[in-house]
Amino acid sequence: MNKTIIITGGAGFIGSHVVRRFVNTYPEYTIINLDKLTYAGNLANLKDIENKPNYKFVKGDITDAIFLKNLFSEEKPDAVIHLAAESHVDRSITNPIEFVMTNVVGTANLLNTAREQWKGEYDKHRFYHVSTDEVYGALGESGMFTEDTKYDPHSPYSASKAGSDHFVRAYHDTYGMDCVISNCSNNYGANHFPEKLIPLAINNIKNNKPVPVYGKGENVRDWLWVEDHARAIDVIFHKAKAGDTYNIGGHNEWKNINLIKLLCKIMDKKLGREEGTSEKLITYVTDRAGHDLRYAIDSTKLQKELGWVPSLQFEEGLEKTVDWYLQNEEWLSEVTSGAYQKYYEQQYKTK
Ligand code: NAD
Ligand code: TYD
Image 1 (cartoon, rainbow, N blue to C red):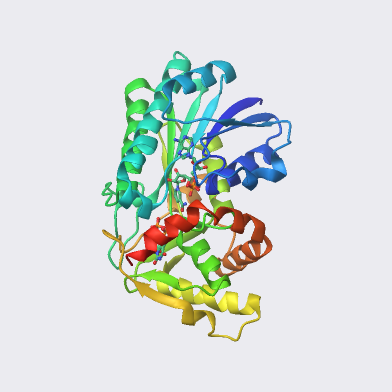
Image 2: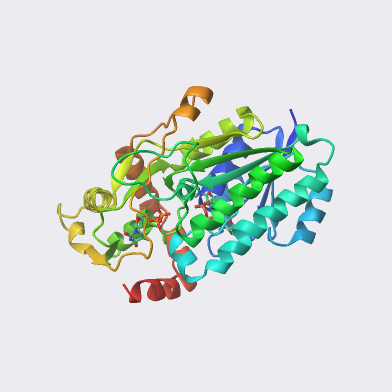
């Protein structure tokens, strides 16, 4: 069936994998990538599909309601898959209001534009909101987040994502719009901006720079390969019931310090360094304020109801990721020039 889908944030890390998957898997769909191209948005992520006939890029800001209204009137989208967001916890600590604007106001704007445009035919249109497990707060040593876990966000990032999730549910409950939400654990893979732990560590190890580990490195994250997330989004978009929520995760918990040590080992091998060389770069720095101890996702619902399972073992995925960064030096040097240097100095000078 022909469909026009607006994917927001398609020039970012996860969005670019989702756009690529939809453009290649569904040639009968028209995919419109709507992105503001902030520091995190990069059209180089989509070079391989930019000339495909079913792909179109539109530069725009989801906080601009007039722009959205015009875009929806012109393109008449059948559905929205919403990934555009400010996504980095550390940046949310230094600049929380930007997160409120994009993540809360931007999402409410998109919902409202869709509500007006799709009035009277909500059953024919889907609004899919991509969210994070961080809305559930922090776990202790045991337990996992399920779809019924109470929201308890701690950082300005997770609070703004929780706010956006509440708006999506409110539009479903109040207006009867067909809304779906998924909450995913930490992603890793190609095209990840090197302000997040894994690509930052790869870049620093490669350049023999200190690898900053917050606090004692005891915090635990549940890592999922980004292409497995994109596949989960595909399955949920096509199969979920209106109003449904799914958790997505890899059952793959790692303490930060153990992950970094594994990465050092892989990098030593790939760079032909003597084993143990890269580990010497590990540097413990001041902990993040309000640092959530542990995240772990229970994705049983998604696995049982929709048959999704992660495809890659972490060690294999991490090796693939390291290979990608070593083979894409130009991408890495482009995103780490200029503004990135300033961010890095600012972020790590106090640590
Ligand atoms: P990212 O920061 O790499 O990309 C975000 C994209 O949104 C960028 O291309 C940026 O230009 C665009 N954008 C930002 N503000 C915008 C605005 N006002 N208007 C239009 N576009 C705008 O983020 P990501 O890591 O790819 O995350 C994508 C989504 O997935 C986010 O909603 C995030 O909360 C969610 N998520 C991320 C992870 C993760 O591990 N990275 C895990 C679970 C959920
Ligand atoms: P990050 O990749 O920023 O993702 P999130 O905060 O959304 O989980 O961080 C992952 C973990 O790594 C988190 O516990 C914070 C920690 N961390 C460091 O120890 N050092 C760093 O330089 C960064 C960026 C993160």
